[in-house]
Length: 117
Image 1 (cartoon, rainbow, N blue to C red):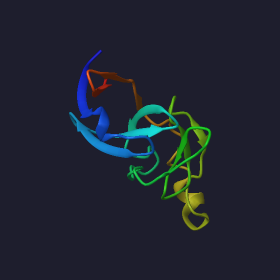
Image 2 (image 1 turned 60 degrees about the vertical axis):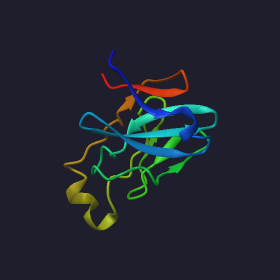
Image 3 (image 1 turned 90 degrees about the vertical axis):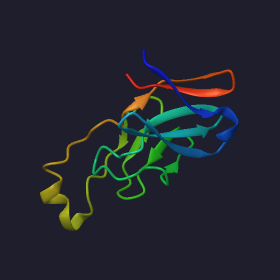
Image 4 (image 1 turned 180 degrees about the vertical axis):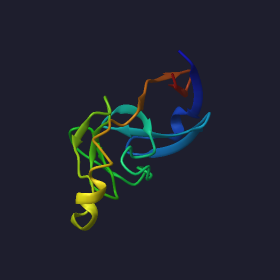
C-alpha cells in the first residue's frame, strides 16, 4: 500500500467535496452520508471532471456532462449513458462501459489518507 496524506479531516465536512492531486492523479474526495470516498475526478467515459456531479441516495455519483452513474464504493457502472443521441451511434462504438477508479481512504491523527496503489 502507498498511503499518502492528502487533507486535514476538518477540511472535508459532511456534504463536501475536494479535488486533490496525488502524484499524477486528480482525486475527488467526497464526504457523503457519513462516509469518506476517494474516486478519480475524471469520468472514465470522456475524462471530464466529476466534482460537480450529483450524488445519489444509493451512494453513486452522476457525471454532470452525460449522466452516467458510478458507485462510490466500487466504481461500478450503475447507469451508462454513452453520448447524446446525435453522436451516440458513432462514438458509442468507441466508448464502452468502464468502471470509475476508486481509492481506499482512512482517517488518522485528524488527516485524510488515500492509498493510490
